Image (cartoon, rainbow, N blue to C red; front, side, top):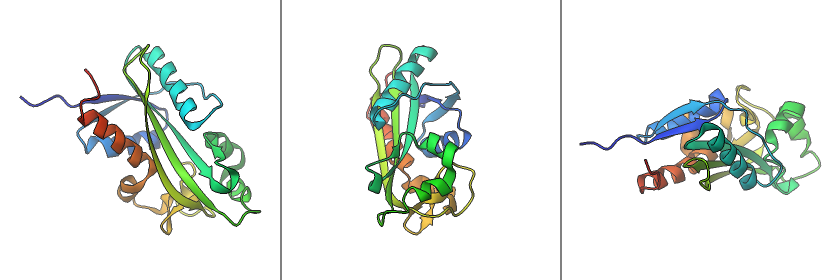
Length: 190
C-alpha cells in the first residue's frame, strides 16, 4: 500500500508565492493547501519574524501550518531592508530601492526565504532557510511579483527568468529543499 502524500497548510494571501511553493513541493509529492490569514509582522530578525508568524498561525488554525517570510538584504546596508522589504516596496518601489544604494559601489544583495513549520498550537516552530546571492539592478522584466525585477542572479533578474528555471535556483527553492528533506526523513508526523 502506497504511503499517503504529505499535506502542508501554507498560510499566505500571496498568489504568486503560493504558485511557487506548489510548483516546487508538488513535484516532490507534497500536497500544498492554502489558507489566507492576516498575521502580525513583528519587528525583529528574519528568524524572529517567521517564528512569531508561525506560532500565531498555528494558534488561529488550531493545527499544523507552514508560513514564510521573504527578505531582501542589501550587503552595503548591513542587511536592510531585510524582513521589512514588503513595506519598503509598498512605500518606495523598485526605483526607491535602487536609490537606497546610489551612494554605494556595493550593489550585492541576498534574497532570503525563511519557512516556519509548526505541528500546531503549543509546538515550537522549525525553521528552514534558503539564500541566493545576487545584486540589485534597475528594474527589468515583468513587475507583477514584488522585488523580482530588481534582483539579478547570474545576469538575469528573477522577473526575467522562466518560472521553472527560477524555481530551481531561488532562495525559496533552497529553503523548500530543506523542508522536503526533513519531511522525507520522517520529520512530519501525521
